[in-house]
Amino acid sequence: MAAVEFKDVNKVFGKDVKAVSDLSLGIKDGEFMVLVGPSGCGKTTALRIVAGLEEASGGDVFIGSVRVNDVPPKDRDIAMVFQNYALYPHMTVYDNIAFGLRLRELKGFFWEMAHLKDAREIRQSIDDRVREVAKMLGIDQLLLRRPRELSGGQRQRVALARAIVRKPKVFLMDEPLSNLDAKLRIQTRAELIRLHRTLGITTLYVTHDQVEAMTMGQRMAIMKDGLLQQVDEPERVYAEPANKFVAGFVGSPPMNFFDAKIMKMGDRFFVDASDFKLALPAGHAAQNLEGQAVTLGIRPEAIFDAALDGPMKGTAENTFDAKVDVVEALGHQYVAYLKIGAQTLVASLDANSGIRNQENARVAIDSNQIHIFDASTEQAIR
Ligand SMILES: Nc1ncnc2c1ncn2[C@@H]1O[C@H](COP(=O)(O)OP(=O)(O)OP(=O)(O)O)[C@@H](O)[C@H]1O
Ligand SMILES: [Mg+2]
Image 1 (cartoon, protein in one colour):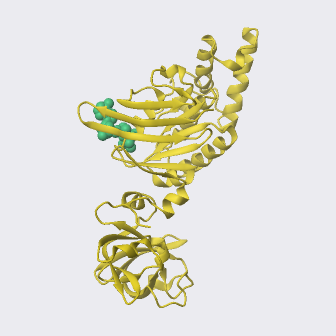
Image 2 (tube, rainbow, N blue to C red):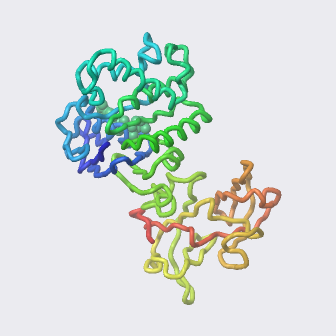
Image 3 (spheres, protein in one colour):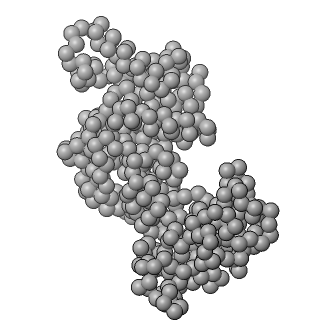
C-alpha cells in the first residue's frame, strides 16, 4: 500500500483545454478517496495521470515517497478498473483473472512467488489466489464461463477481480459501476466498501454521482472545470460546503438558492429573500455583511411542517405560510414544492406530514441549517 499525492498538477490538452488546474490532493495510505464532479471536470484525466497513461503538463505525482512522473505505468504497481472494462472475450473467467498474475510471474515480478521453486508451485499459488478473489466477489461458480455468457454485473465483477487479484499498491477506479442497473449498483457499491475494509488498499475512485461519493468515500474531493473545490469527509461536505457549487452538487433534492440581503431590525440580523425573512442564529458570520447581497441556501431537509415535531417546534420564529404546489410521495418522505409569495421552495417532509393533502401549509425553516454565500465569489460565509 502507499499514499498518493498530487502536487500542483496541471494538464493542458492542445493549446487551451485546461483539463486539470493546479491540483494538490493527498490520498492517505489505505484511504478510499472519491473524486467527484460533473462531466468534463477532469476526473478521468487526473486518474490517468496517476496511472501514467497521461503525462502531466506540470507538477508532480507521488506514490508512496516516490515521484512517479517518469516511472512507466507498468512499474507503478497500480491496478485500474475502467468504466468500459475490456475482458478478453476468448478467455474463461478464470483465465481473465489469472492473466495478469501469469504475466507478472513470467517477468519475475510477483514478489509472493520469489521464494517458490518450481512451475507447479507457482501454478498452485496463482490458482489459490484466483479462487480466493473469485469467492470474495461471488463469481467462483462462473470461472469456466466466457465473458459473453455473463450478465453485465458479473462481467463488472470479473473486471474487479482481475484488478484485485494482483494486490497492487493503489487501486484506480473510473466509474466502475456505471454499467450496472440501480439494484446491482447499490449491491456492488456495498461489496466494494467491504472489499476495501478487508484489503485496505489505497483507492482513488472516480464518479460523477454524488450519492456514490457520499456513500463510498472516506473522504471526497469535488472538482469543477479542472479545479478542486473541496476535500473532506462526506458529512462535512454536506454540512459545511465550501461554496455554492459544492452546496448545490451534494444532496438530493438539491439545495434551494435565493438572492437575498443581510439586514438588521432592532438588534437582530435577518437574511431577506424578499418574500420571506429569516432571523439569523446569534453570532452568525453574515452579521458583518449588513446591507450586502448574498445567496441564501436552504436544504429541502431544513424545511419542516410546522405542525409536526421539528427543531423549531413551539417557536413562532422563521415559520411561514406557504402554498402547496406539487407533492411527490417517496414512501418514507414527501418532496413538496412550496410557494412562499413568488419564491418556490423544495421541501423534503416527514411521511407523517399532513401537508400533502393541503393547499395551504405552515412551514418552519431551521436557521441553524441555512447556508449563506457571498453573492459574487460564491464562497460560504460561516
Ligand atoms: N485527449 C484529449 N484531448 C483533448 N481534450 C481532452 C482529452 N481528454 C480529455 N479532454 C478534455 O479534458 C476535459 C476533462 O476530461 P475528462 O475526461 O478528464 O473529464 P471527466 O471528468 O472524466 O468527465 P466524464 O464524467 O464525462 O467522464 C474535458 O474538457 C475533455 O474534453
Ligand atoms: Mg471520465
